Length: 379
Image (cartoon, rainbow, N blue to C red):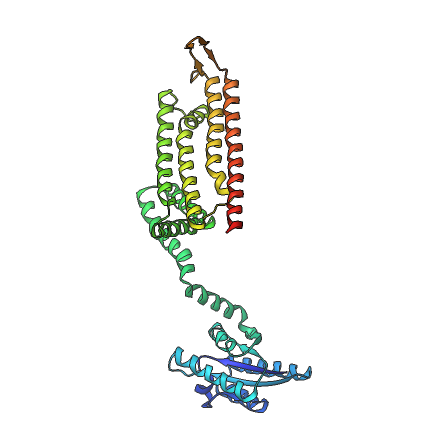
């Protein structure tokens, strides 16, 4: 098994400093190149990189593995021409020595960008990055900052908010006192961190993408979702209007229950519309439907009934809504005497009705799923 230990110089330092052409391969040739580079520029990190390549090669020889050390370098005309030159040199080394794998020795993130070029031509077993010990912290910080500034998304996430804060803070400080300025900026930063930390931007992007795809594909659900949003807004309006009619102006538990009582029917209808649209999309697209989608409409109705029942029970106990009363009714010879339900009976009726709707949904979804499976079996 033969290993190619290749030292990569993307910026063309070697031909520029020594006047030699690459590729250069062989132990003696690379040793001579180290001396040439050391004399030309003793402070260049490429000297350490060449020595590291020799060290790796000697280590492979000590383990009785066949290894060839080589150096490839780009020209200084442009990034594209430099990469193309290195690609040609790697191809010539592979044709000359026919290695089974390669070890790449680099000294910067600039050289590291050439790894895909090498990997596309030969299997890379290891990447050895050389950092000069005396300047390790400084060089690492430099490359980290360079990577940071090269990442557009990271710049927009960090630098843009900091710039906005530095611009807005003096304006708020001139219009108000220090406490208001610090509080406002802190609140904005907190909202931004929550916005990014909880991935709200990604979810909003996904929603817009899904809405656009739904419009282009002609899905029924996009219409039912709009209907659901409209019904939810009507429910919110009905809840606010209902609480104001009851004379509940303060924010308290009873007010919340009143808002729930008046808004939940509309919100449940909105959930029913959205789940029905989702169900229709699934049937149209796949000509069958999963049990979970069949359960959605029944679950929306059952949840609405149960929540309505509990909120009605609390409001009736607070004497804010009347009890359910049935007046005396005559049907021919039959007379139905009037009666009224207690709060407990009213709650039990809504809960039982919600459970029955949920059970009916389970029964219907199971039956339809079985029918779909039998139809597929016959097909």
